[in-house]
Length: 58
Picture (cartoon, one colour):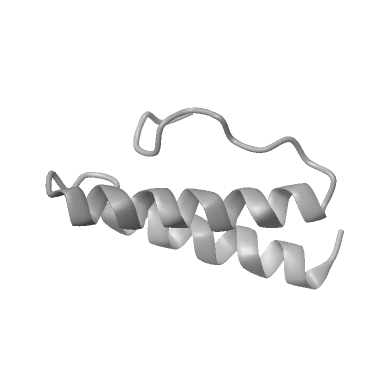
């Protein structure tokens, strides 16, 4: 597990959580950016990426 991967996953998680419940297209875009960053960190650490839509709780 890399420190950089963990940092990306953590930052992505926070960004996703902040914006996931927003109804505006901008909020949804930022939630997806957070999910993408989170997945980048997960892949770096050898974990499978999250494939569900942000905000679904999975």
